Image 1 (cartoon, rainbow, N blue to C red):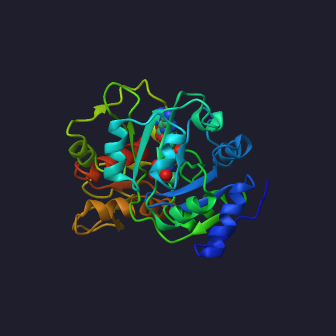
Image 2: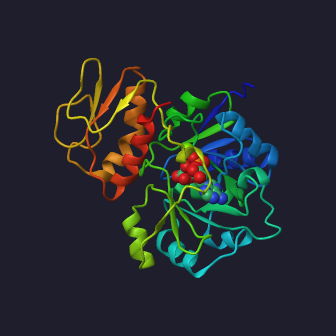
Image 3: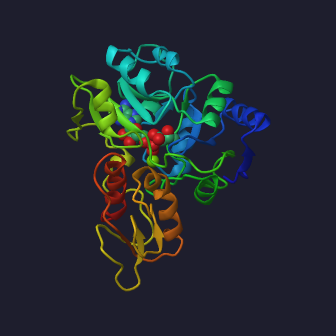
Length: 313
Ligand code: TXA
Ligand code: MG
């Protein structure tokens, strides 16, 4: 189905148009501070089904529901003291909380993949906020890329991957964080890190005053948790000190390379550049070697994404 994807400017008219498209059951990609999302009305099963079709995503994977404000969460889930602590500290922002669903929540079963929990996030990006406020309802949104490929941090990335398959993309430039949200499960005895992401684990543990448990693997197997994901066309070799023949070199810190995640060795800058640099190198369809990245703070999520990009397909 070719819908002729519209590129909308993130002004009042563009937001109104995007909100009307969502309300009519169409798909709209919008920027968040992490990556561009592929939005659909989370109450509309037909709209949500189109998200899976557009991405070519296995339909058993649940989606994150985006809300304009923290108060809206209690319409859908059983809230808790721990949820309140984390929401107060980090919402709006790059954190997703998995919480037990309330009866009569009204969300499509496709969003939750039939589970008794749902993943919620209040994004901080002004345009995401404006869209969610105008729409005034829950928006299901995975990253706006074909399943298994590199996540989008610009409207150009979205168009390159999904043009003709979605109604519109709200273009508001590159995403500041550049890594998907950190996902914390609050449906278990202990708060559990389900996915490393744009909010460093250390910050969450400081707010909680306790370490996060690690997912034991019986949680949802979802794309961001599959071993091969974020895959560029060429193979990816990690912890490389330099490129071998024909390889492109993705550097970190002061070094000679084709593209540098951060010449000054700054992990925040590296996170923001990661997917864009992978997209740029991907376009050359050659093998990619990547310099070592320190494994603390945002480095943990960067290394997680790089390991998946490098995993056997
Ligand atoms: O930054 C982000 O999180 C972006 C932007 C658009 O918000 N979204 C995103 O969505 O990365 P997606 O669909 O690519 O990743 C959703 C993740 C999956 O890895 C899945 O495991 C987890 O959310 N998830 C969703 N619902 C869940 C649930 N009920 N229990 C456990 N994990 C869940
Ligand atoms: Mg994704």
